[in-house]
Amino acid sequence: MRILICLLLSCCSLAQAQPAPDAGYPARPVTIVVGYPPGAGTDVLARLVALRLAKRLGQPFVVENLPGASGMIGASHVAKAPPDGHTLLVAPNTLFLAAHLLPKASTPDVVRAFAPVIQLSQGMLLLAARPGLGVSDAAGLVARAKKGPGLSYGSPGSGSPMHIAGELFNRAAGVSITHVPYKGTAPAITDLLGGHIDLIYGVPGSLWPHVQAGKMVPLGVVQPTRSPLLPQVPTLKEQGIKGLDVTTWYGMLAPAGTSAPVVARLNREVAAILAEPDVQKEFRAQWEVPVGGSVEDFTRRTRDDYARAGAIVAEFGIRLD
Image (cartoon, rainbow, N blue to C red):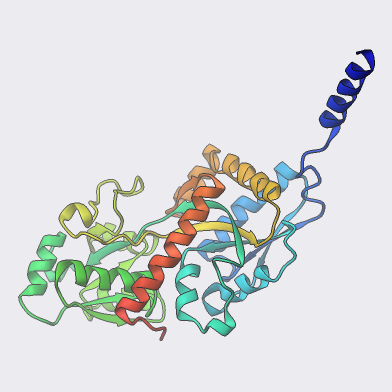
């Protein structure tokens, strides 16, 4: 009996002495790849998180910008990296839309090539009109559009979430508002202010200063519930425009095959960072609401968004410029 007890105690001691599966992580500096230029929204949020991860985990977390091909150059780089947690990707959900629009031969399989880590934040799209149009809500816009053709909306380009929002609005409201694609948001804003287009879909960071100046009229946000960042602006859904959910978000991903303990460790650390009051303040300054959540939550979100994007691209025959 004494021998059996000793053996049991020895086993318990050995079990307690075993290091956690992620105990050696990170073993060296970690690279966070961003597929957009420095200063872009993705880059700003990645650097906020990288700085705090370095402090928490005791290794440098370095942001590397690899812009091009709608973020796919950076994504492809991470997809080919060793799956050891030392190369990560921070990307917007447009990555899962671009995968349906770019040539398959030049893009990774975004569902199979990555291990989702955590959703960093959620943003929103805003629909705004030029004041001279004489509408102040979605009902007024629909009534105006049904009087006859001629209305137009601008977006940063064909295949953008803003373009998709406009097509979904047309379908839901039973109207035909012409899409005018631009090379970015700035020229679309310029044309709306000049009266050359009637409407614009964009992120609040770009549009809200013009709303405050009285040069744009906000008609609604393009998501199911009101945003805490603009609680005074109703959703298009609550104004009777159903089936119009085009939310934007940023997330962190690792190469497929990265061990579950490392992914879980990153998820825990980033979730703790997102809960910090100063981080929440900095995210909100970028018009983003911190999210967090589990690995399973984010995995489900990426799969659902990829499938939905594919269905929308096929339905409307969307192509890149």
